[in-house]
Length: 617
Image 1 (tube, rainbow, N blue to C red):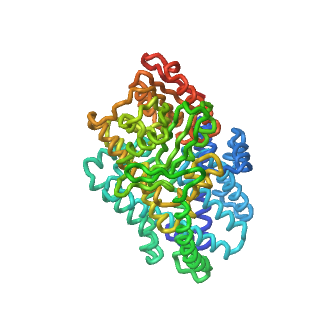
Image 2: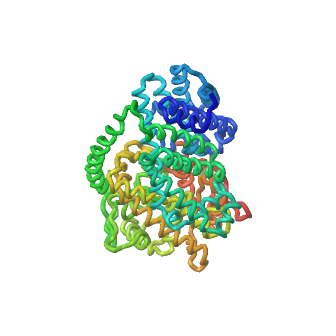
Image 3: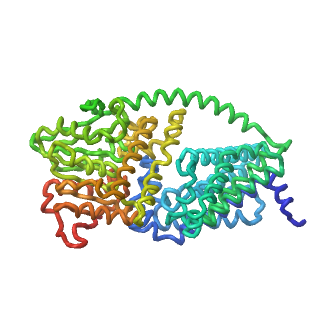
C-alpha cells in the first residue's frame, strides 16, 4: 500500500505509530550527535573547549562515586566506545526491527550512553542533545513495558513536557527586552556562532521582516497549548508552522540537529490531541491534581527559604556603612598586626564563600575581608539607594574600619575586578595594589562596535527576570543550587543555596549589571569617562577558557596590566569560575597572588612589546 502524506498522518495519530515516529527521530538525533563528537576529538584535548581537566567540576554532582564514574567515562577509549554504542543503536532503531524488547534494550543503551557522555560535551552540546536523550529513554521504557496503558502514560508525559518547553521558551522570550523591542533575531544574526551576515544585512535594511519573524515565533511558542483545542486540519497547519520554525532555525543558524530533535516531540502531541476512544487519559488528570498540590507547597516553602536567605551565614557580622547599607562581612585577622589586609570583591551574583578555596591556599600572612554587596544574602541596601551608586563609598567605609593603618590590597573576580578598578581612585585609604582575576572589561567582541559589545554584555542577564519571577512564584525547589552556588566546598554550597533560591540576589545582580554595562559602554564611547588607572602594582590573571571563547579578552587584560609601571599579566589553565573553585586551578592562582603581594616589583616582566604576560599550567 502506497504511503501518502494523509496515511502517514493517520499512522502517527495512533499509539504505536506515534511511538515509532518519535523513536526513529530521536535515533537520528543521537546518532548524528555522536558522529559529530567523534569527528571533533580535538575539543576534548588539553586546551580544547571540553578539556576534561578544566570542565569536569562545572555544574555537576560532587559526590565521590559520581565523580569517579565521570572520570572513568572520560577516558578516550570509553568515550569512543559509548559514541559507537549510540551510532549502532541509532542504526538498529531506524531500521524496521519489529522485536519490541530488542528495540527497548537498544534504546535504553543509547539513552544511558547519552547521560554518561553529557558532562563531557558541555561546550558544543545543545538542547537537541537533551531532547534526544529524553525521548529515547521514554520510548525505550514504553517498548520494554509491552503495555498499551504504560505507552499512553509515556506519550502523555512527552506531550506535557513538549507543551511546557514551548510555553517556557515563548514566555521567557517575552521577558527579554530584545524580543519585546523587535531586535532579537537581528542580534543573533550578527554573532559569529549562530549568525548569518547576509541575513543580518537584510534585517538591517528591513527591520520589519525581523519583527514579523519574532512575532510569528512568539505566537507559535506562547500559544502552543491551543493545539489541543484546534480541529484536525487546523491542528496540522499549526504543527506545520512549528516544523517550519525549526527548519528555519536549522538552515539559518546551522543547528541541524534541532530539526529532527524537536520534530520528535510532535507525534505524541498529535496522538494525545486527537480523539481516541481507546487511549488511557489518566495521566493528564493526575498531573493537574499534582500540579495544584505542588504549587501550594512550593509557595509555603519559598517563604521559609527567603527568610533563611537573609540570615547571617557562618562567621559573618553586620557592618553598617555611613550611607545606611548593612553589609554581611567576614573578617579574619592576621597573625602579625602589621601584615597587609586583603579585601575581596565578588563577581556578579556571587557571594563571599566563593573565595574560600583561594583563602585556604594563600600562604602569605594577611588579614582578609570578604563581604556581600547590598541585595545579596543578609546585606541590605541603604534606604533609597540604587545599585552600585554607593559602591565606592561603602567599600571605603569597610576599608577604613578594618585596615587599622595596614597596607591594603584589593582583589576582584570578573565584575568584582571592574568594580575595584573603578573604585580604587576614589578611596580615601591608600591602596598598595590591585589583583584582577578574569576581570570584566569594556570589550567582549572582536569588533570595534560598541553596540555589539552592549548586546553581548546585556545577554549575560537575559535570564535573570525569569529567575526573579520564578522565585517570587514559589519555584525555589526547582533551582539546583549545585549549578548556581559554585563554591567547591559542599558545606559552603549547602549554606548559600537559600541565597540563590531567593529572588533578591537575581534582582540585585540584574540591576548591578545593567548599571555596569551603561558605565562600561559610556567609557568606550566617551573616552573622557574612562576609568583612570591607579598607579599601583597590578596583577591581571586570565582564565584559559576565556582566551578560547573570547580571544579579545586576553589582549584587553594584557592592556590593563600595561597601563601601570608595575603591571603583570598571565593566563592560568582554568574556567572563568573554576579559577576560584577548581582544585586543580586554585593552587596556581593562590601562588601567583602570594608571589605578587610579596614582591610586586620583582615579578614584573620587562616592558617590551608582548612582555609582561605568560601562561601558568
